[in-house]
Image (cartoon, rainbow over all chains, first blue to last red; front, side, top):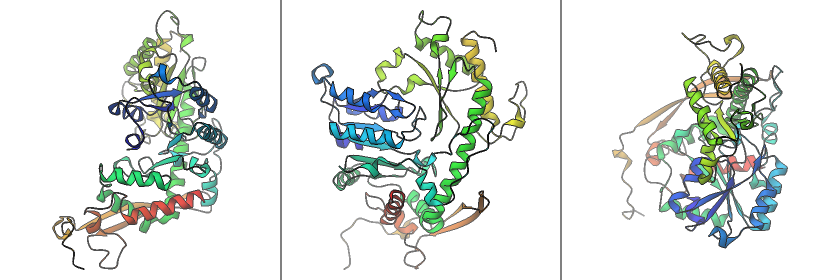
Length: 359
Length: 85
């Protein structure tokens, strides 16, 4: 809906270099594309955004200067990066300079976790009350918006359930009016069945305080899962080849695999090494998502320069089965999430096979 | 005013009389952990007329506003205000 309101055929949308593939693909029927901006552990780099726009050549690009930015500022899919408050302020300043509209897609906002304290250390104390909980969250772009250039997309998908298919938009009155008109001629309105169940639970059941209690519980649960995944990575991945940054929010751990350590690096494409590693992982019976799937500039997917793999800590079941016939299981006494630890162990085996190193 | 102008069917013919939703309720304890209980929320077709709720199945299952139901919009607005405070 947002794209259809803002874009003309041929336009570019600015996104993070690696981003939510559906956000990219949704632009294609409108005959639009993404242009990717370099990122680090805190997501989009403001200088790279500024440079892209300063040097935009409409003739060479065959498109007007882009003005629409799509970002997942917290727990980004797929990289797990979270923009800190200062990073957000810097991006907002670039947006003011180039008159940009910022779409902040924040389904993972409330999946911000406790600070990572390292392997085998006690967890950080929980927020004492709702105020402390809210203060612990990175400020939204909305709270910095003095020009009405922010469109915040909120969703119940990651915090209540994806099947509710309910979310909401917070933006300026002017844009809000356009969203309403667009809604009338497209989806008409959200599902009544979803709305009545959500309303009864949120308004008359939990109330605002009860919803925050739910979110604090989720925060504890996701922190445990993330910590379990990071511990498995520490234990099972070859650290001279694989590296990762502890995610502060979301559902994903983004694992960088150093392609230059491959014995045939330079003699063959990085894409072919990515394929080998994906296939070797499938042979070991673990599914991990290749980073090239998420490149904002889809035409670069076959010439990917670096190896990344996305793994999720959101999905694994809490361990019930302690051993499995025919496989060597990760030490069950040390892991609450056996499947996840076992998956990472298998990925470690696949990396060592493809990179031809001893386990 | 008696309206014959709209196109909303009567909820009398919606084959959904009631939905019960069992949901967990969490509350932080003083020791720093979370306490979990369960409650069943009952959603009827005519809760508004019967004075039980601000929203009911009869209204929710009919055609509504493109913005979403007013009751739901009020909740997300309050939530957003609390969060940005």
